[in-house]
Amino acid sequence: MDTDTDTDSDSDDVPCTTPNTTYTIYVPTFLDDVLLSQMLITDLNAELLKKNWLTPELVREIESCFPTKEEISNTSEGDNIRDLDAFKSKAAKLLPHGRIFVSFKQLDQVSKMFLDAWAVNKVHVTKRICCSYSATSNKKSRLHPDRAKRRKVETSAKTLYQCPFQIRYSFMNYSKKTPTKKPNIFYRVKITGVNYEHTCQLSTVFHRESKQKNGTLQPDLNGLSDIIGLLREKPNLKPDLLRPLLLKYIPYYKTIDAKFIRNFRQRALHWIIHQSGRDFLMEDARHLSSNAVVAADEYVVREDPESTRALTSLLRKVMQEDGTTWEAIRYLNELKIPNPGLD
Ligand SMILES: [Zn+2]
Image (tube, rainbow, N blue to C red; front, side):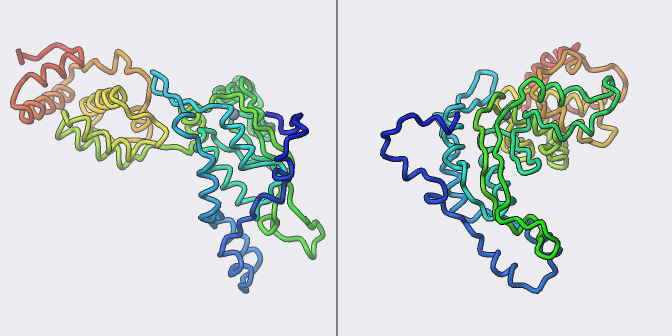
């Protein structure tokens, strides 16, 4: 959306949309106390950077710009896609050109909360907030000089989408002179440029991939390790009992549906059979909570004494729980392995 293309000149709501007049500047209550304190300016700076700048009223305003149920469509693959036009109009409402925020940190937190709800992973570069699929140039220096050694995924996704979404801002009454210069957090900021266009999908899958690439979204290792322990004792734990646990320990943006739970259990039991001798690692946690289809070799149970022992122990527990061999047989069928004398 281009905010300058309002050709409807006789529209009578123009005066109301004049920047700076309709938008409240939300000043957090901690600010006065902090500014009046006798702390060193460097300590003050550190303190302010850690603060939550979102006042309750501001949070309410951000929440009013979240996607509604009607603006999110659920695909058969379990993805959730948000409506782009709705995104643009709500971004324009919350983050219009000319709006002032009490600090860059406040603008950063507002953007994060808003963009998270729209499944966009925020990136904050110099005086600019953009989408993680934007073609930001400041990361180039980190690329390996040898093209062959560059991490491919990240560069290709950015190059492919070059998402133009961005909110530019400037510091107000900024002083560069040494005696009066203060850390950036002490300046109000004003939005000076906007582009609400968004070329990558506003989808849960995109958001998750982007977060995973940036390492900001991790399954809870200890939590999943506990679930493994639970499944070891109750391999047949009912999905309605497993689901809340998975919801608790797996990043919010994953869709935890029946298929996901089935895959998770399959992988977890495979892990128990083959890997129980070692520690449960983050890469295991990521693998178990992956949305990818379970690969054929993840069904295969190797025929070594250790694995056979683990499998027998699992099957015994399934049978104890259900008092029948039926579930154990069903499980073996799912594992596509020869039935060791259960029928
Ligand atoms: Zn984007």
